[in-house]
Image 1 (cartoon, rainbow, N blue to C red):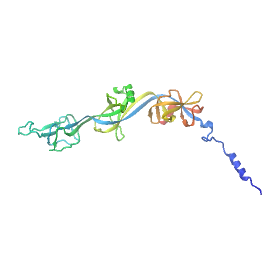
Image 2: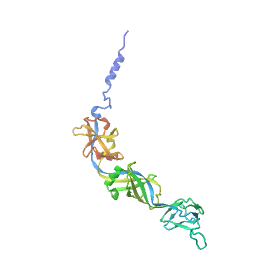
Image 3: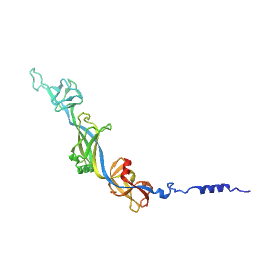
Length: 315
């Protein structure tokens, strides 16, 4: 019986016709190793930190009953704006030891506003019996607001070095409201707390904001934004870095086109960029594209580009 060899020949022809390729990426080694490198430069950048804050009125007090007695006619309403020395309450004392008026009745005790402000809730109505020291309402002066927040110790030392406590003109303080909008009035640093919280590692701060339209109210929450300009900052694209065991690295290319893995310490994050505290400096060449295609100590072919153009494309 005659055995056909045609299938074997067909298989051989198919095998010979397949193109040779690199099993790793489908590209030739010289093409696979071609990467993009840029020279590190410095430039001024604006750094912004955010801190959750509690907003309080510049003046905020509880109006209490000076004596036990019955409330007289209440001529104010909740949410009303009052002026200093306006009459808020009158209390008719229940004790007979108080001074009598011309009709042999106990004289009313008047309570007046100590400053301009806004009346809060009125929990008691006319004729209510109140005890001495009970809170009749609260009064808030909202013309100036205070935003209280905490800053980590390291950031506090950084701010002190930039004279933030002297209201440096290069530093901008803003307030972000709960709806994501910025408050339309700029702030100033009001105070830095005298103590350091050992448990949290924070230092208390206060920022002051004018509130001409009374948009801000006592008890609100927001976010304080502190922005400052840092000159000669080293900025690199985030995609030029890679992480190993919670540490950041870049590949630096030497004069012989050999890449070396180097750790960098990140100071701040700006969208797609990192501000570098240490690890690379001006005139270092780093790999900005193709980081995952190379290994430490490998000699590579690359395209040289300006880092400023790379950063501009990211921004």
